Length: 426
Image (cartoon, rainbow, N blue to C red; front, side, top):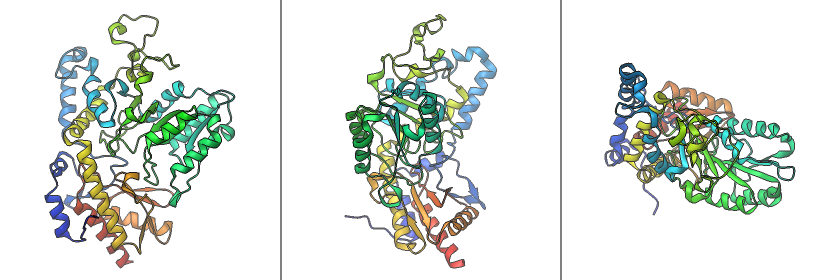
């Protein structure tokens, strides 16, 4: 039966008191507002800083100062193979085998590196299929790759228009597009969660449809990693890229992540070669011929930036302790409560454009303010002044994302009460 919610402080506080994950909130620095914790709903854009990051970074700085180059071989976590300290937890987070993942570079760089290998256009099959209104990182990258290969984006960039409410995409629309254009499509590149609408996509179903048409399949998981339980290996997708500064709380501009399916682990694919992608057992022999490490690590270019990897290591350890299944269960409750508050208490003011089906969304609810963009922007600015931090996406969307590691039911209620207070004052 549907959960029973109440728009009262007593109810929200009781849920928070009974939350088995409540203690994780204390592991993060919550931005203050007027002497108390603010209400932070922007983990979909920049996650909060884990308290353990500062001492961990300080320790690495101490090793650098005390050991210098010997820090590659000594200390608690020698730098030479630092990626080893992240791999297993990263693989678990995204539902992959350890050989299939690596933390490296940033999302846009990794997307280009993956397309070097997995976008191999021909005159008969030059196209890339993306969603209309894709995040600029993806659209800029695919358009430039198409041009780089000598094709015209006007012909070879196919954009899927939303056919559902508020611009969401149905599986039927994806299937129709592949039936019509699949013979020309070299690469299908879609998001795990669409950044503006908050819609989540079915990786396995999309991959099966695309592979049946002879297309390679990749996903941008920027808004999905750390938000949804993922099963990248089982999905069959060829590759995925993502960032770690959103739900994975690894800091602004954090090191990104890459998944390459195990079936490509030793494939002779074209790629840009780099020293750190060479096999470890002969990397330091300085051989002139590139000998790739099997799996995703073979796409590395340079040795990892240790000080940038430390926050990711800390955050992955937190996720390992919390468990994505438990985090997803709490996320469903929190987002469900936020949705109920909007629909039951604020329907005259707000409209949710994210799918109502919980299986088609993560923590994020994308909200429009009734009355148009100017009212929406006015509400957003008011909320910021009240210490309630979401984010604004043009032209008229406020994104509110209760992250289960640190958000509470009381935060959701505070958002609803602030919206009503703004309306009553206006």
